[in-house]
Length: 136
Image 1 (tube, one colour):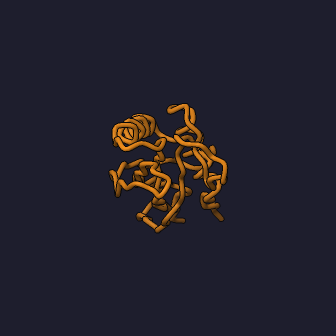
Image 2 (cartoon, one colour; image 1 turned 120 degrees about the vertical axis):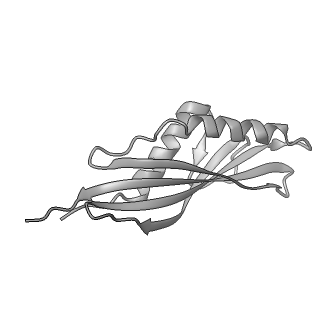
Image 3 (cartoon, rainbow, N blue to C red; image 1 turned 60 degrees about the vertical axis):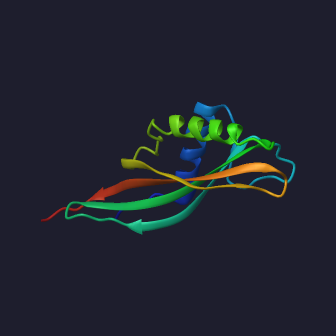
């Protein structure tokens, strides 16, 4: 029997890396009183990617970069760069799982929220191995 990586473990690993490398808070649920700038991470997909020898899943995570209210886009561009640099280092998963690949799929959108905060969404994929297939 094998154990798949739970979404809680994945999102906690992403949050830890983002907070450690950017110095900004990374939420999974944004509190009502949260002041910008901050990041918000959410898992938006999980699909199998098994091979002949490995049990693997690919997780898609959207990370939102929320800049302070301003008319300029410069702050949100700065937070995008900080996030991209932070995630050039692999996230750390629990010991029984192996991160096979961590991919930046780029900026999905940049918009201005009703609070006048610039809001960018970046997509990342994490391929995780959670077991090997054996022939007897």
